[in-house]
Image (cartoon, rainbow, N blue to C red; front, top):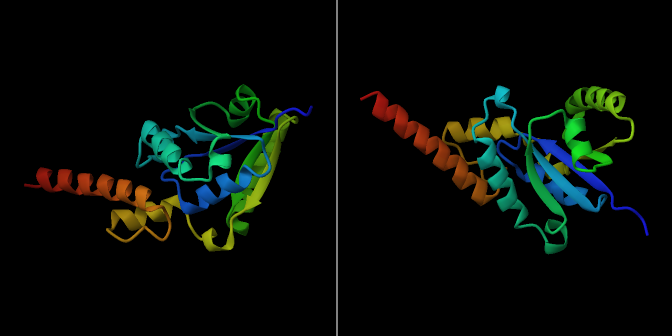
Length: 177
């Protein structure tokens, strides 16, 4: 009997995009269990709190096919990625690549991670062509300016983004009165 292969797919997921969901689904084809690690990373000034991002990712996973979603766990983390991988018994780190511009950073990160623990491999999954241009940063910018983000995120996530920005606009308007 072979050992179960555990993979970790880390990110801030602020917010989770259709591209992230695609990588999550595809990653379940190469690992037996996938841990989606939601990085706390307050330094990036996230739109959603860590707890909100974990809840949003979990809600998105509920809409994946049953055979995939039953093999996915979502957890927050604020340690080194390699420590998180070890703590979760992972032998693989999944990283999504959208464009050549992502590769240099990811290549350097994979090299550093390998130096920390050579028993954990990094596996790069290219974004599907219809998702290569999507980034959470652009989604947030479009949402902040009142644009339609539904081509880039699920309708559920789009509602959360709109509610967040509507709440911020209401607070600003109240403060300016």
